[in-house]
Amino acid sequence: MKSDSLDAERAARQVLSGSAGARPRFGSETQALRALLATREGAVRACTAALNELRALVVTSPAELRERLEGRSEATLIGSCARLRPGRSDSERAACALALRSLAVRVRQLRAESETLERELVRRIETLAPALLARRGVGPISAAAVLVAWSEPGRLRSEAAFARLAGAAPIPASSGKTVRYRLDRGGDRRLNRALHTIVLCRRRVDPETKAYIARRVSEGKSEREAVRCLKRYLARSLFRMLEAMPRT
Image (cartoon, rainbow, N blue to C red; front, side):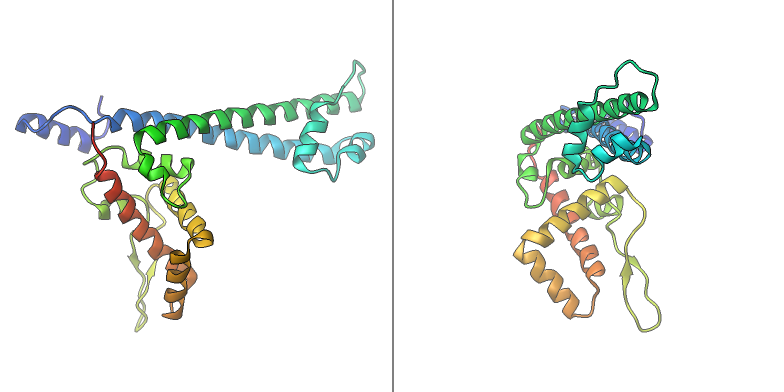
């Protein structure tokens, strides 16, 4: 059932004009990606919170536990805490050991959950839009965010609308004789973060991206402005690729 008034109006017009054909598969598939992506993000946030709690508890634990656990790497710390045996005493040490073990087990479970969800995202994206996942710098999480925001062919009227949705459209910020544009703080921040992640990845490994940033900086732009331009070009490229994909 349509919950967006613009989508509902567009669908009604297509039905009345007789131009509405079979519904593209992208709508339901991207909604499935949305559910997986949101659940994975929740698991990652919960995992980070549990890990922070674990580290804070180590600092305030009794001396025996603190000296045993401080200074360990993350993986070693989690493994050591998961193997703690609190015993049956009513001591502070027993309570802290139980709490540390519980947090370590929670971190492991949440990481396993997020990895399972990510594998499912990869499987679905490889079926739905393999060309997107094959793009340099595009990982499964970024690809899922792009597909979820795009949703289905025809939802957004143009690549400019997609760029505006992504918060990648340039906003004039000129002053006097200085002509410049600033970053857009609006739009879909998950999509904007995905574009930013892709650009940063390409900046490390893609010679063309490195050359583009160097050229823009030599022309007087800051690196931040060069990255903004790259995000706008990336939004255009991804939108055109998605709109051109087969619909059935």
